Structure formats: C-alpha cells, structure tokens
Image (cartoon, rainbow, N blue to C red; front, side, top):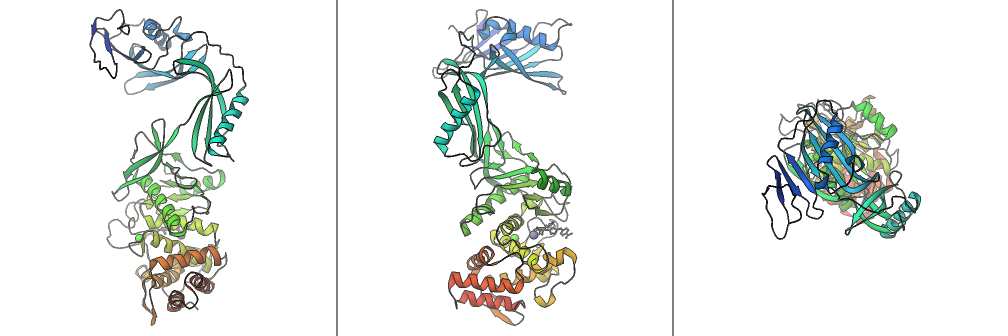
Length: 538
Ligand code: D38
Ligand code: ZN
Ligand code: CA
C-alpha cells in the first residue's frame, strides 16, 4: 500500500483488481485520487484550505500550494522549477482563477504532463487536476541533433509511409520535450506536420534528440461520424474530424475535403471581398462532442457531402474541378440575407429573414445549384450574361433538381416557410413564378445580367420535358427519364459547351451528347430535338 500518503487517516476508496484505483482521504478536508502508473495525484479536492496571508499574490499562493504537496507529487526542490504556468483564465462568474500548468524538467516540458488548478477569489486553491511525473533524474537536456535534422527525419519517414508530400500546410517545427515512454524518458523533438495530400493528417513524430531515431509517431486527427439537426428539424449524419476531443465540420474523406465555417453575420459583400482577396472563410465551427447544434451549418455540411456523392456516383466526377478540390461553405453570411451563392471560390449561405427564406443551406437543390456553378466554371465556363448566363443558371437548376430528385422545384424546403407548396422556381411549370417557358416569351431587358434567372426557365422547361415527356405548345415529347437526361446534360456541359454557347448551340450540344451516349437516331436523341422544339429553340 505504498500509494497511501503517510498522513492519510482513512482509506475511503474503491479498489478493483483490474483497475487499481485508490482514493485516499488525506485529511477530513481533502480527497486525493492517485494515478495508477505514477502514484502521483490525478486530482486533489480541497474542501477548505488554510487561509492565505493577505499580502501574497495569486502566483505566490499557487506555488506555495504546489510546494506543500511536493511529497504527493514525488518532486524534489522548489515547485517553480517543476511547473510552468501556460495559461491563466479568470472566470468572471465565480471569480475563480484557473491556472493551466505544464510540468517541466530543467525548463523542458514533459510531454502530456499538464495540470489545472482552480483558485478561489481569496487565493485558496480549491482543486488540482492533472498528471504529474515523479522526479526525473539524469537526463541531459542538450540535444545532439539539430531541429532541422529532426524535421528532415520526420518528413522522410512520413513520405515513406504515405507517399510524396507536395505541399505541407504551414512550416513544420521541432519542439524539445521530455518524452516518457515504456517506463523511460528521453529528450525528444516533437515534429508536427500538417498534410492534406496524399493523405490528410496532423502527424506527430517524436525524434530522439540524442540519436535521431524515431521513438514514436501517430496521426492526431481522426475521421469521425457527426450528427445534428438540420434546418427542417431532420436528423442528419455526416463526416467530421476529431482532434484532441474537439470536433470540426471538416470531412477529409471526400476529395481534398469538405469544410464548413461560420461568417458570424459578416456583411455578404464584405465577406465575398475578403473571401476572394485573402481566402477568408469565416470562423471554424467546433463542437465538444460529435453532435453539432447549428442547423444551418449541419445542412451546409451534410448537403455538400450529398452533392459531392451525387457527382461522384452519377458522373464519376471528383468534386467541382474533377481533381478533388476542397469544397468550402460558410453559413450565417450577412444579416437575414435572402440568398446563397458560389462566389468563384466557395459557397456562401444567408440565414434568410425567416419569412421569405429559412437558412438557405437547408435545401439540397440550392446547395447542388451553387456547387454546379463551380462545376460550370471549371468545365464549360459559361459566361454569366445573356443566353450563356441563362444556360449557366439552367444547368445549375437542372443539377439541383437531379440531386434533390423527388420534385422539379427549386428551394421548396426553405422558401416562404409559412406558405405550403410553393417554391422559388419550377422546372416543370416556370409560369408558376411568372417565368417564361417558351423562347418567344424571353426577357430581352438588361436587369439580372440580361435575365439569367428569368430565361433559364425556358431551358429548364426543355430539360423537364426531355426527362418526363409531355405536350407543350402542340409539340409532343417522349420522356427519356431522369437518368438519361442528367447524363446528356453532363456530357454536353463537359465536352461541347463553351463560354459563349447560346440556346441554339446548346440544343445541338445536347443532341451530340445524346448521339454519343445512345447512338445517332436513338429515341433519346429524337426526344432532345423535340424538347427544344417545344420551347421554341431551333
Ligand atoms: C425571392 C425573394 C427575395 C429575395 C430573393 C428571391 C422573394 O420572394 O421575396 C433573392 N434570391 C434568392 C434566390 N434567388 N433570388 C435563390 C438562389 C438559390 C435558390 C439558387 C439563387 N441565387 C443566385 C444564384 O445562385 O444564381 O438563385 C445568386 C446569384 C448571386 C450572383 N451574385
Ligand atoms: Zn445560380
Ligand atoms: Ca427540390
């Protein structure tokens, strides 16, 4: 029973054979739990400490407390030489001060040995938590190899394990630690390397500072399953990343990643400027558990994953650039902003004003619409003006309606929450929102870049007729189904359409794509011809 402090009056504790945990009652006013491996306190709860002299500082009081417990900690000499304050946090509510400590040996931190001390306003210590390494002896803290050498070794070993690293996120550093392992402790460099390619990771290498050998290595980030409630109250699950018990809306399983951030209501124009100029994405969204409590963020993240999967499964496309490009989304852009956009770099979503829109990321078709703008930018490059602009919009609506497959409406899940059954745009019947469904009714003014969100409806109607069939303006179209329809448009977009493709060229591009996929003279090709004829495109 060597773990029992000499002063202990009473053994209060629980002890199982498997889990040798002892709680000793060191005095009536104090309870201590000891660490099984080191037999030093894991916590000390002080029920009432002796009064501190009025004229001591908080720090003096802290170190006098640590000195008082020297024998529990199995440390020799002044506590000042064993503990370093890494952080001081004052809690305005309880007026307590929290000290975060790092245990050091000859000034070098001991890896993983950190403590937290809570001090009351009267400078009495209330509790001590942490892990304390007993007195370390005879370790030279003068490294024999350089930091550069350690970094080089870590990088070489990492590349041997995951392949050549083209780009390291940030400059890797080597920091000296005392690294306890297997009952021993060595002076080691901790080299941390962040990578996204060929494999995402936050790699930790402990390199022996005496002989340059790798003592241990691991990846500190982990893929995890996150959950949360979306904008419409539905439970979602999605991939996230866990690091040190903190969870981030970062999916490293798809392409080069899918990340979701929070603009904290920063004005939409300002956000777009910062995003395009300096790559500002907003604040990281962190959760202490795998459950995320921001519906707009949950949906932006889960829906971006769903759209990535839609493109991957349907067209074998790896993200919007066909090369795994990271998909970044930011929610809470602007105050009550009734819109969503692809800004050329990333996706931005407003919260809506609550009556016109709910948070726009809540609609899978809107998310697919925006990501498709990125696909178009990286493929056909359709200009955002006039007929090419209307086609750009229409392709986004078509893919929006394909990814969110149960209807031909756009935005119904978030548009006017108090009005049932309406939507922002309908591919099936654009006239519901007063949009044209025939070329003869096209908008020829200058608003909206020449009516890109208006004339898109003419082409939307053609796509709807192609998939579902129907009679429109006395032209009968045989429906070919959603599957053939989406393949034709994807092929046209990626092979035949260019920046200045107009409606008439688009018709021919779709016919060529249908010929490639189903053969010249196929019923699919014939239906494409008819669908365009029905909306007045020759
Ligand atoms: C309707 C109402 C109010 C505002 C808007 C629409 C109303 O009924 O009172 C604004 N708005 C939102 C959208 N369109 N107009 C929807 C989105 C979604 C559904 C795709 C949309 N956004 C544009 C786009 O992605 O093409 O269409 C954003 C373009 C931004 C270009 N700078
Ligand atoms: Zn659009
Ligand atoms: Ca829809």
